[in-house]
Image (cartoon, rainbow, N blue to C red; front, side, top):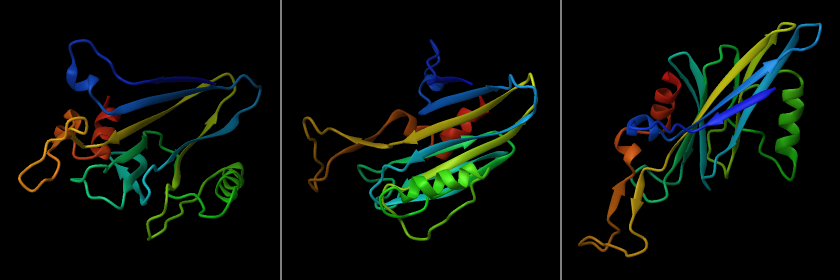
Length: 196
């Protein structure tokens, strides 16, 4: 198994170098004498105190959008993340089991060890919920298979916290991060990243 992970930095190409995304390519090589069924899960914890996760199916890609349910996208502190894969045989779990102590990870591992992860959906926001996007494949003997994932982020709003600037209502003057002027959310930038 090999992992190639990177964030784009392309000289003289500020657009693609500014993509708010990280790319992960896992290459699985089967060195055994038998075909193997292989599953890989990319797992992300929503950092928001009021977390909302939702499945994304768009342009042949599968994934999850992780949002901050407690803030709107015009407020300081709002953020969202998106994890996408272009793999065809996928499974998505919007939410890990909500429980105490080690229940969430124990439940996930039991389900994943059985060969698949079923979707779990909650209608109410949680607190730093975890989600997973899985990719499954048969890897033939003496062959390899590549699994690709993109993780994109969106923290659109910024303000001058070191020397505060206020407007006439004494609110902080906000500005958009550069990528937020190009993409409306992390799904849009993840789709661009997956487009290559």
